[in-house]
Amino acid sequence: MSTNDITAARHELAAARRCVVLTGAGMSAESGVPTFRDALTGLWSAFDPERLASREGFAADPHLVWRWYAERRQGASNARPNAGHLALVGLEARFEQFAIVTQNVDGLHTRAGSRDVLELHGNIVRTKCFAECGVRIDDPRDLPPGEPPACPRCGHWLRPDVVWFGEMLDAEVLERAERLAASCDAMLVVGTSGLVYPAAGLPSLARAAGARVIIVNPNPTELDDLADIVVRDTAARALPALFAAT
Ligand code: APR
Image (cartoon, rainbow, N blue to C red):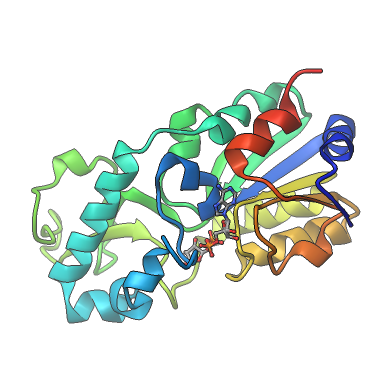
């Protein structure tokens, strides 16, 4: 593993034909969206995740959980894509295959203009029926503000369309993400602590398939030993440098 070798990382990415970018909360840190585990700003340091991000937590106190997500939704909609998000836009044209697999629910990759974005953990803007009757609402402006609204079809609560602790990921999205990881020749892993599976298992899939793995993170992560190159820098600084036209 070599560290901070931007030139080597640029060379690997320039030689790649099929690239997957796996992103985590650190990708949006420079857009002002708090990460989950950073000691100072991590959301989880202020809340008990089981209480706020699980079916049991929502059923126990739907009003608290709904208000927390409404606040996070507001934070995400006020945030703007940063230079890291923007550096990834348009790369579809440079590779035979290019996709972004994100753990983030803030929608910033799509708002930046990236086209092929797989949202492994859902999207905080979308809302769905807690009773799983099939209702999904894409635009929160269609929802009454304040307390959890009632499902227009079955009358149960509506809930954020995100993957909660203890819930399964969307099988189709995960299967596609795993297929992309197993067939890429370069995986860029940006802004994730690599603690939460199955997302954290994707770099191993890529490596097993012979892909070069490049990590961008200002701090050490669980995935560093898997990487061919680690760039100890932030997303908004490193990504423009990695993809700047030669
Ligand atoms: N640029 C790049 N990386 C950064 C930056 C930055 N500006 N700032 C922080 N980081 C890194 C941190 O060093 C850390 O490794 O981002 C990572 C954030 O890690 P987490 O807070 O654990 O977020 P993430 O890895 O996305 O968590 C995965 O856990 O709670 C669940 O569903 C939630 O999707 C989330 C999943």
